[in-house]
Image (tube, rainbow, N blue to C red; front, side, top):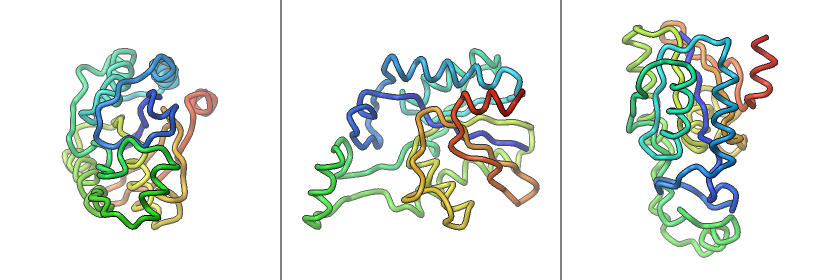
Length: 194
């Protein structure tokens, strides 16, 4: 089985360098165009099912992908939701640094909880074995947490800045999940699939 993890398209908060957590921020025009380009990158790649976080920016990206790939309706999975950044949500990098320096209580979702809920979703589909190729649309921090977990800390949270609509490919063989590639842009994906 192959699982593609795709980060949603751009939002205004992305453009403003605001930390997006569980706030429901829609895609902007750039994000819609990025999502269409990402969908086109899968033209020659079979995908059986499209999953999505329930947040609107991920769902809109997923619906564009599912429509072009003709996979049927998007399946919304709560476990693919972005990390709850608590007190840091909505803040710019500068404001976040001020809060961190002040040592205020953050009330942020613990990283291990995020990894567990996301991996629970993936493992459920892997165990079911009904699909050969799944595409899951999620968020930067959530995907990075999974990359951190699966890579044994080599990449992911604190090390990798995921681009909007980047593509990350996981190959699953029994209980083993390997990262085949990560943070690949739709244009790079098109070149790879020729």
